[in-house]
Image (cartoon, rainbow, N blue to C red; front, side, top):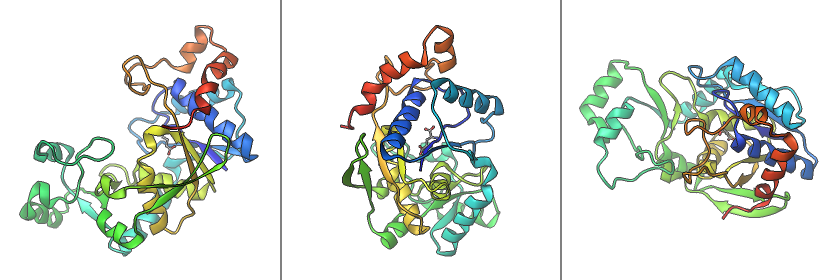
Length: 286
Ligand code: GLU
């Protein structure tokens, strides 16, 4: 089983279409079904209208998929269960430092995680022991973070299986979870996070092959650690190349990438879009 997992926070652009077609191609070559997952845990940004538009875009591109569609916002209880299991093993802790406090405490040259954010290894380093203890006692709202060093002590340094564009197994890739530091598994305002929901859902949906953009390659290290801790199966992975905008960065709605709907209104046909994306699908990651 494969999945296309958009966030209904905005319209799809050509980058999403590439990911969708990469999943369709892999599903075809392996003879496996493709399903859809709406990654709508951020309820402040997710909109039913975007979900409807995404499903319309998928139909416009002519990609067949197998129901049921999974909507993450309907499964918060599953994520809580996973968090409870990690908590019972002493692997998560409440974390109080705000994003601003973390940024202010960051010294030049201090380590960053693969996404460029400060690498977090505990509130004490940011807030000091006394303030951390005060917030813990005062029941200040907290995020929950994975104690990554403890997790890696338990599960060792993971690897992950990769497949090429034609579905051929391509060996094991090393992963570096410690580079992430203590990632957030549940946010202050959302009882889960991208990392936690993805591993729980991939297991629930029986995902055997994860096909997604190269921007998520590094995150696979976190996912493999969580899969091992939670006793979930390890899918094989393919991280496809990204479409870059004129600024050399990946296409994004915030940088004004045109929506598929706008491109279609300008006369782009599904066939023409497929023809421009297909050569990129076959490229192997550098
Ligand atoms: N929802 C993520 C995105 O839109 C994809 C997550 C994944 O494939 O693991 O980038």
